[in-house]
Length: 257
Image: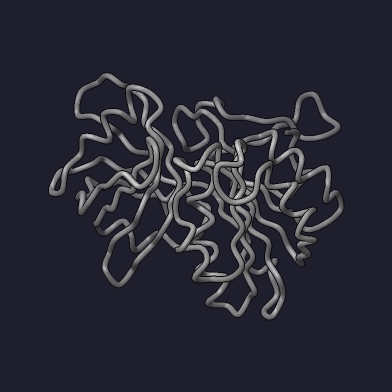
């Protein structure tokens, strides 16, 4: 069920280079359950910027009635969002989309979580819920540089955690796929979110395996009405799926990357 609420800012802090952790409270949290879903946030009271910003849910706390969103300051919209202070209200639409299928990971099995940059946040709630279901969680998180790294200790609380940086300034040098190969990481199911080249590399390397990918796309409405975030279905020039409403999580091979 999709809702809309002017949620209250509980706190906001910078946790890495141009990366912020925003905690919101409100009744809407009661509807948030699936890791991998997102919310559509109006970043300002004025008409400019007009479009909402799609931001993934990082943590859901039903007991406190709070959720945490981690985002990176990229342009005018997210710059305005960084100015929000405790007590401010934010217009939030959500929860939106279909998240990661928890039942794809058997209890006692091994789930490999692979995140790249700002694709890391939705994997945290996934790690928490999988661990609570008795799944062994292994996380591989990739960042551009040491200054961009966040939530290493938080993920480590749920299982083995590896960090890769493009420039080798922290953790292992290289890409997340390099870490998986070098460490010989096995899995029963793989969940990933991050840049499209990373997702494509994972889909190709583990073709035929249970791999679920969360796509990042520019969106207009966030509810499947504007057709701004469509992606093609393999083998067809006319069939497509909408990232906002059919996704953002798809099984590898379900859509063209």
